[in-house]
Length: 249
Length: 271
Image (cartoon, rainbow over all chains, first blue to last red; front, side, top):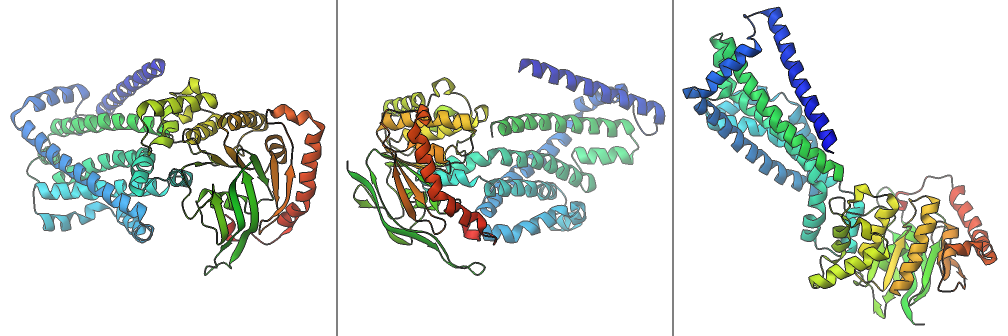
């Protein structure tokens, strides 16, 4: 086990090193006009992070993202469990949800903006729009695909319906639900950042667009780097828990 | 010997649906199980063996006749003193072996000491004491099935219903599991009602073997083995073993032919 972990750690380091090497190589190829070098970016990032406004932008993005994710999880689980239990509603609504999922959600953004106005609520709404659906679909699937033999066992042990849900259905569904949460996490983040990029006065997404507007390559690269590091770190963590849950199942 | 389970005129007909005709799946069946005996049922596939077990277990209602358990009629729900083990692996993957076995007692109001003691005894009886903290994913199919048997044993059932519990296991494991089942049967003193498609398994394990006809399943023969109570899988060496198995096959051959001779696809209710 520790051997495997050491292997994993080494592989991750190699991957990061390779990415930096690739970055440097592309930088040499395209030059300062389109890219800043890894070293310059890291230096600029250090500066940016310690700067005055950064904290405000970061906390803005994080607040929108956190609210959006909590809402996505709550709505996703509630709707997912409901549709999983209620066969008729599930059969009727699942195709519609899948269809909505397939729509490029950016096209809905103007409507959301009109409905929610500029600012926090639009960001949250856009994040929720992205994040809820995968959580609904994974939860619905998890509840529906509970092995019938486990439900039969619940019947033989004469569990009441609440006991059956709490002791059998829920724990049996957790690995799948967690996968939904993991996917929902990434998509909520994308949603909130996109919302910031297109109509916002604050936040990392705004900072990014600002960098593009001012042709401040180092700012663009720094913000991108920070987002990538955050998303990759959390994703890796969630993926590890996910794998552990699935291994047991 | 006293009668523990009495089935009289039990039958099951699945009602017609818009896409299928009504299906007479089982019965009528009259059968009495004696307290503490080991009764096996064999029959061609689709003859309603599992339906019969589910009726006794209270999992599905009979559409005719009545089932009495220890003098009381079973309607809808079976009493706690009936335990059921299925062919499919029903271990709960998120719990370790001990928790899986203790799950059978979750609803009960036993004191913790008593509960722990029962779980320990059951684990010892099925030979899983060394795997108490393992998870089902780390166990073989036979071991997982033993977990399910232990989960039933902790409830101290007086009647244990087994629906092809070893059906998914290889032949050697099945013989050994049969030995363990006999040990458990003697240790608990419970009545065992075993459904199997393996004739040798039925012959090796049971005191009496009921042979069922093709659908609608009826009992067409009940064979007594007259084995001593102390027995194990080495009983296959006896000459009577071959004779009994042969008798079962003679009765069953024609019925099984009827089943596979049908060219029409099986109705949905069979699944």
